[in-house]
Image (cartoon, rainbow, N blue to C red):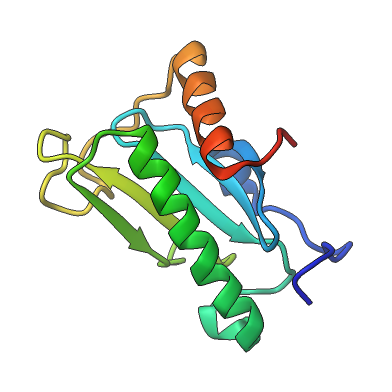
Length: 144
């Protein structure tokens, strides 16, 4: 079932603390990581009890891949970058979520993975809101 959000779905508290909501795509909640070191979007399928990609049925996996590609296009348009990194790790936050990170050869971690390299730097409110609005426009989604 792609449409409709089950009543028992909830965003993991760590994701709630570390991100700002962008909006919803058919399957996923789109979030902006509050770390201005890297333009960084997280997609969370709005289905309960998901840990692994294989916990999604085939139709939802196809939908997730389409939404990842859609966000990659929007993020690449919104942020000058040399590479987009996509990862679904879940070691610290077990709820299934996918990171899409715009990377630049001049960023704090290049060419290493972003985790643990530089302390997070919160966005200034205006800069965060500009990026969120740019992403919403690129994704053609509304504010939650």
